[in-house]
Length: 85
Image 1 (spheres, rainbow, N blue to C red):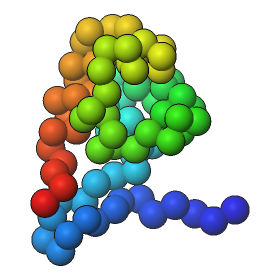
Image 2 (image 1 turned 135 degrees about the horizontal axis):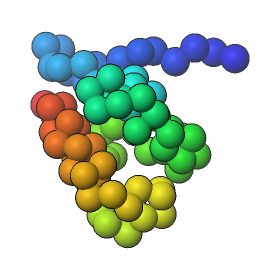
Image 3 (image 1 turned 135 degrees about the vertical axis):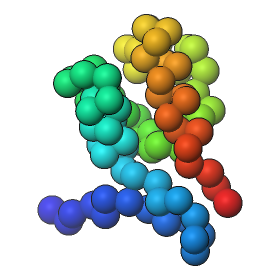
């Protein structure tokens, strides 16, 4: 099994984008253990990375089992810290 890099750099000088596990762990550290990493398996099984969260709609979140408005808001707000350029 190959190890996954802990961050992805899109362009030289841009803010590093964490892998989904690290992103969710950071949210757990801010808001409480297992509040976000409990969704890790679903994100991985659907091949959703951190930047994909920016374009998820309410239906997508529901399919992932995320119905809490607060959880959705926190995910989207945090992902806005990372950009494509």
